[in-house]
Each structure stands twice: as structure tokens, then as C-alpha cells.
Length: 335
Image (cartoon, rainbow, N blue to C red; front, side, top):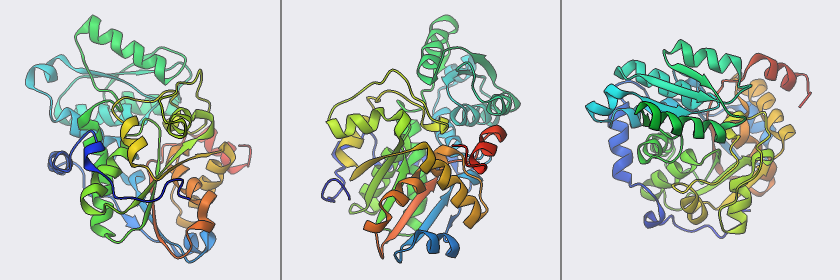
């Protein structure tokens, strides 16, 4: 570990520039303060090996997840005509909540498509922020198709959770903040659903810390990008099965996959049990609640921790929106 020899991140392989990230930061800063980057002695002790572990707390955002950065970055760039027509997206929860709140803050109508059987708690949060909710499709990828139909039928502007440069620029502000506070960080673990946060990490690091080792982490039950990265070409899967619904994608995305392929030092797949154990570990040592996707970076670190002795390592806790039934299963060791 890492799978590839660590090398400097080449900005030419990235879909957005560092200037795009700084512009996104300027747009979102009136609404969002930087989130905490913290150390925890009990967590360091459990991880062991003299690792100095930094936790980036995106669970402290107004929507309890990083996606509000992406949404404000994207919506704040829309021209007046698109703002008046409104926007549409597909989500399993956090992107929809972020877009709904950003729409409320900026006065833009928002429609959010979710799959059937989506978390009722996340659905209520989306509606609570003022968005119109539509349930359609068996999973996230089918909900994207529903959103695309509404673009045609109602003239809405599509804000994809991954394939949008402004979304990537918003996500990159996470690592921008990390590296300003911990400029000598050596390794960063980032959960990978569609890849916006990990591509954002590569963009920020390309300017501030080009030698940073960036490692992606996917759920083994939703491992399309993991399989594609190791095969060297995009892969699509018939299903994505994981309680970490923020990672439940089953394909590779054209705006992020080439950058992940070129820039990541490694991409790990972690089991459901490993993600659940990371949720419990964060709760026990930091008293912070993480959803499955939010704990995935720590699960990846745990999997290879013996190879990181003495290093300064960061993990991005991307969100804390775990619903009560799932949390009960995690705490009861039923996952």
C-alpha cells in the first residue's frame, strides 16, 4: 500500500482547476464556515502505530453532510433564467438535502428524485428544506433517469451529484480547508460514491500538497469504481447493495473516473461489517455520529493501518445522516 508508487498529482489530468476551487470557496463562504479538523487521543490509541489521525467533520454542516458545499457552489453559478425555472436532481439523501437547502437560501425551486424505499428520515429532511420530492426507480441510477425525464418535461435544470464541474469545485473546498490547517499531511482517505470528494481532494492537493497520497474507499457491495479503477477502464454493475447509501452507485462517471484513475494512489473496497465497525469506533472515541459513507474512510484506513506507522493521516467524515433503524442494527452488531 499504496497500490501505485506515490507520485505528484498532475493538474492536467483533472477536470477542474485550483482557480475553480478558490472561486467556489468565495461563493459558499457567506453561507458556510470551515468545518473542524480534529485529533482524538482515544482514536489514535485504537488505530495504533503512532499514526497521527486527523478527522474532517463534514457531519457538522447545516445538513450534517458535505453535499451542501457542492449544492451552493453549483446553484450560485446559475443564470437568472435557470434559477427561475428551477432545478432537479437525483439522490439517496445527502445531495438532495444539500440542494434543497441551497435552493431555499438562494430562492431557487428544487425537485428531488429518490428511489423507492429510500430512507424516510432523509426524505422528510429533503421536504423539510422546501424541495418537491418524487419517488421513482429501484436505485439511485434509475432515479437519475427520472430526473432527466423532468428536464425534458418541465424544463428544469439538472444538477447531477457528480457530473458537474461546479459540484466538484464545491467538494474540493473540503481538502482545501484540510491542507491549510494541516499542510504536512501525508495520506488522505476519502470515501468514493460518485467521486466528487476524491477528485476534489486531488485538485486541492495538486496545488497545496502535490505529494499527498490520496486513497479512495468504496463499499464492497457498490464497487463499480473500485473494479473499474483496478481494471483500468469504466465498469457498470447490475446492483449496488450497501447500508452506506451515500456510496450506493453502480457505475463510473465520465467527469470523475479518468481523474481517479490518474490521481489516486490506491482504491480500497471495504465490507459492510468494516464500515459498521468504523461507525461504532467513531462514536466510541469521538462521540460523533457517522453514517455509513461518513465512516468509510476510517474503515479503509483501518484495513491498511499497519502500513502507515508514524504517518500523519486524514479521514473525511463526510456525513452523519444515518437513520434510526440502521443505527440500531449497527450498534447491535447486526451488520
